[in-house]
Length: 455
Image (cartoon, rainbow, N blue to C red; front, side, top):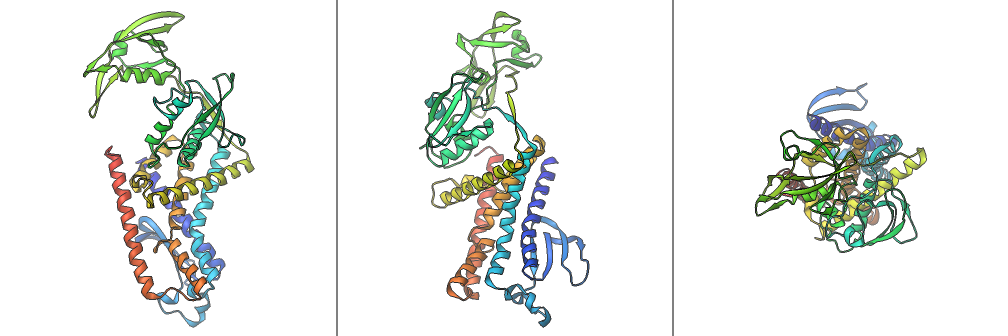
């Protein structure tokens, strides 16, 4: 239920913002707005202050909206109102009205990111767990317990790393741009500083997903290899493990963090049979040797070891919060970065350098909306900003049916001095509908495939 409500709220808010951009600029340019609609289909709610005023409606199908303006191309216009018709306005006014919707979404994203920065959010500290085997992080010499303090793309423009989330975002950008980055790291106590060069070129960035994150090599945030809650009757309880036990080694191999311990437990299967783990455990200042035989859990064709106990302590957290001007500046920067990334990925998908699996549809958006809403208000603001950026950029694509398509018509009109002919308008409209239907079909297919675990 939370997922559905969060999705409907997200869609409703972003549609209102988008259409309000069109509406506000149309009114400022002297265009008469007949209707402001949120949704399509049967009208559920209607408000009109006077017969000559704009009609505001809420409709049954909340999958978009529209602003209907007075226009001689859509019907007869009384002579007294001709000057208020959209088609009679100069080119700059028509272009401004069309561009105002996407720009409203982008401006809204800036404010949402700024609000999240002002409120603040608790995120894992940029202290790394064990790097993924064979990853760029492991090859660079990063180790469990390394605290990443700052990052640079050129070696001279160092920027502080605020959290593990911030680090992941910056490294993802570096991977997509096929460039190396430098990290300044210390140990967990802030001592022994050193520089590390992380080679991110050539990782194969066709898809921006968990696979790319694994290739970079950032696993879970650092967490001590401590046993948490133990399930009664499970392998851990049967072996005598207790909450608070710190696992120092398994089979004589030191455990640097909880990620290394979890990986060792999962891998304790050979030829379909669980293998006994010899644990060296510290408990109340004493060292105990405890043998644990995991149970086997199937994950498709993969057999994994499980001990039915929570492994690891909560990671160290840091509150990321900014002041008024800095928060606004960060919001503007993040909106610009995500816009640029979105355009880059769309371009790479068009020429075949990126997978169409990156396209997401309403099911994925609904799922992420529910997850972010459950994580907290600040996380939901960030999600809402991300979708707002995507909506703004999507509408600026030069496709008929979208605002960007109309802007292309106006560019043609500005260059040639005449509007696009009705014949070409009809042809381009049909082509635009075909492209949009294809994009929607691919996005919906990707949604279903993700839900079924096929992506």
